[in-house]
Image (cartoon, rainbow, N blue to C red; front, top):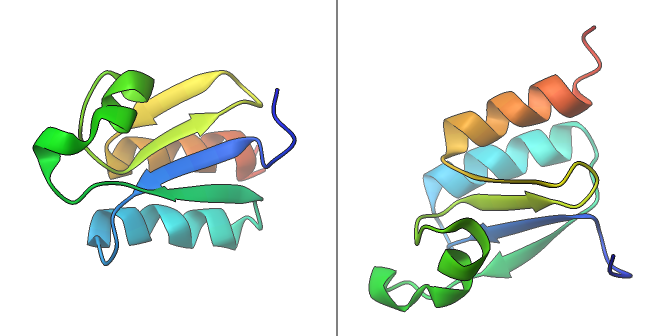
Length: 86
């Protein structure tokens, strides 16, 4: 465990898919850290090490042990995990 926020979002500047995830994180008032990654796909080694892919957005949630990519999947996960709509 780290001392920072439990959720880390790997993202690109001005990426609409990343911003979609940011909106949901903000909507649920979740504490997260943003890691802005290399714009060139072939250089996104930090994301590949974490998620197995070089695509963003990618999220790591230390609260649940979940690591995932694809904005739609992340948004669904955030709603299911933090939405409180049970």
